[in-house]
Structure formats: C-alpha cells, structure tokens
Image (cartoon, rainbow, N blue to C red; front, side, top):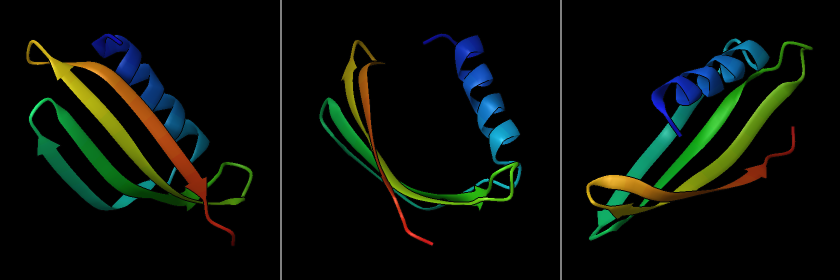
Length: 77
C-alpha cells in the first residue's frame, strides 16, 4: 500500500469516527516479525459508540513491511 493509499485510509477513519483515539498501544518486534496491540475508541458520525480491541501482525522483508494482518474484536457497550 502506497503512502497516498494509507493517507486516504486514515482520512476515511477520521470521517467515520471524528473523535477517534487509539489507546493502550504496545509494540513488540522479534527478528522479521512484529505485533502491535491497540484499542480504538470514539463516536461514529451517526452517534454510535465505537470500542474495538485489535492487533496487527507484521512480517518484514528487505527493511519493509512484506505482510500485515489485522484482527479486531468489538467490545460491547
């Protein structure tokens, strides 16, 4: 994913959840693998509360991200 695509993706997040905040982020790198844990909270444009736990798993090759997988679990209000 190029830089422009990443910017567009983040712009869509801020449009959908204007007061978004990422909390409790923890990152671990081990060799060519990494994990990023986080919590995504905010209020959707329609007033609905958003509260999600997530993690991203990364594989690196040649100093770049070769693969990224994301896993989410929505918390109940």
